[in-house]
Image 1 (tube, rainbow, N blue to C red):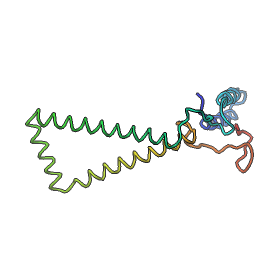
Image 2 (image 1 turned 135 degrees about the horizontal axis):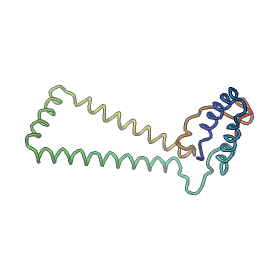
Image 3 (image 1 turned 90 degrees about the vertical axis):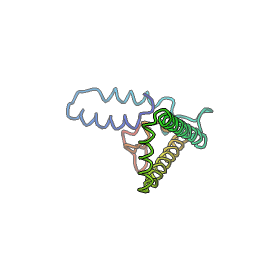
Image 4 (image 1 turned 90 degrees about the horizontal axis):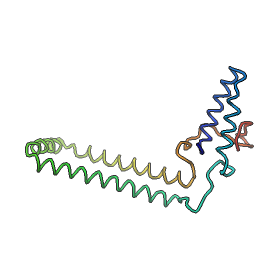
Length: 163
């Protein structure tokens, strides 16, 4: 699959260590061929080139903001719909709900529920920012972590650097 160069580099290193243990296995050559095939159509850094369909960070963030807003809105519609259907459709359950909400009110537990809601929104916003930055950086999902820094020259130069 294209875009898995960092993971493949780590795999190649592991394979080369195991190949040292068992000489004569030709799996490293096939892995290098696979890496070269993965790099076709990519720029010098191994990233997908920008196209007219590439999203900017602002466009990606707007997309994810709308997505999370729809998820929250749908969740609220379902939650309130189920709550209202149960309380008006089943009077015996309405008394149970009333006792539970009274318990929350008497013990001042509303703040805890508010904190959980705020944490959910904060976590969603951090995810939204990360997804927006990833779109601008042109880094695909499985390769968003760096396993090993590889460079053709400079401080991190390596003979096994793919670029």
